[in-house]
Length: 225
Length: 224
Image 1 (cartoon, helix red, strand yellow):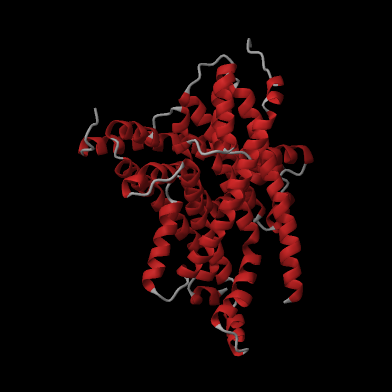
Image 2 (tube, chains in turn brown, orange):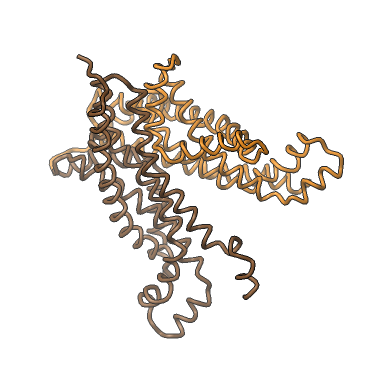
């Protein structure tokens, strides 16, 4: 029997947004923690940590997110864990997110002028404190716009979790479509919902970027310098 | 761990995996060419003097960049038939990928065009070049040269994203891998090998783009 696509079906889709958002937050937090480690290893003075970070980034940026999700999903069941879509989706997206955030943040850390590193070293803080007290706070400021921009990629990436059976927005759309068979309306609405999640982040990221870019500062401000 | 890995049977399916690799390569190559063409048109639209054209291209770029590729793909494959456009899985996959890449390429090419100094265009005009000549010799080639590395990264991302088209069973590496697994249930082994092939493909693309950048654009810059 084919169900009508009514407001209650639409509301069902809207409610599924929370799983997409929750998964994106999990991936972003997990990916942020691991990504910070990767970024710090990537700018290490020693060769081995650097090589490990480069290999990690190349591996996860050079393979499809879908394959990463499959491998975590099927790999977990091989390790004797119950094959769990939540775990696989969160873990797979964490790998993916951390590789990209690690690379983005590396760029931000390396954008800090050499003089700041030299100054920090002159204070004899040691490598960890140097990073924590001098470099990272400055890198943080320039890292915000691209990080917010990447959150859009994470949100969109969560849609692939539907393929391993995680019931987020896209998966729910498939279920609603199977019942109502109105693919154009269902997927059109789903696309709109993703757009409403992602577009504000894109616009905010662009706005932040413009604000940090000295070219767009008022001429009077530049003249003072 | 009680599971016994059997990578031996991967060799038995090697011909299928190679075929899948070829199909992914072909799909990606078509997408790159067509997507870049869409990107150049889009960039033209974005820098056009017509407000309507600018609004349309802006809407296209924002709509595509802020929705997941998977949803775009399902909308093309399942949604378009209700508008009277029925596509095979392969056609739907190619169309969705071109539409997706086209939006990103539009932004990248537009950035390249903006990086061409206005004085160059005025100089072209002063030399009596026609508008299409100015576009071809003064604007687009230097613009593409500037943004070629960014385009290359986007091409690799779209090649990796092509694995998603297996959900509508369009023919490429992931779909072929799925078919093999449906017969022998060796999911981990075959996805592992497919992942390795994708990694090799993206490293190969990186190397090829670096060579192309060097041969094509360095030579052009030596002439101009």
